[in-house]
Length: 161
Image 1 (tube, rainbow, N blue to C red):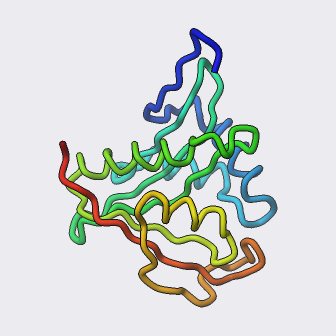
Image 2 (cartoon, rainbow, N blue to C red):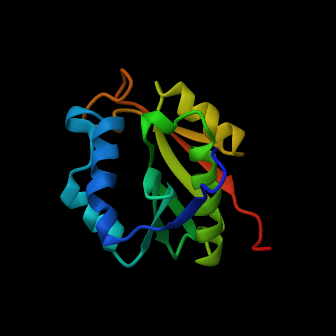
């Protein structure tokens, strides 16, 4: 990183929707990507948070989480990192920030679903402390990484420090 550049994780703004949509389409090509309209809905709805990582004015990636107050489970709806910034810790930083946000909202667990064929993501989540809870047959309408099946992973969140 060049001196003077600052990596920042912040809440997404309406102005970010276009870039978020572009990253989503890059990470999930074709019919598997969330539409721009659906992303805007998730970003702006009350029981969710969207965090973005930026460096100067460049958006590296984002994570969208939803809160389920009764079960106290925060769900990672999607986490996307621009391919030019992958393998640089962006995903782990976004996940850690999202978990802190979940704890601040009273969540006790973080949960996510991932394609059983997305081995890189599964490895990342295991590195972050997630364990496999169950396998979900035909979870996706369209194939993700060669499969319509998903794996549900969960992590117990530590108390807020």
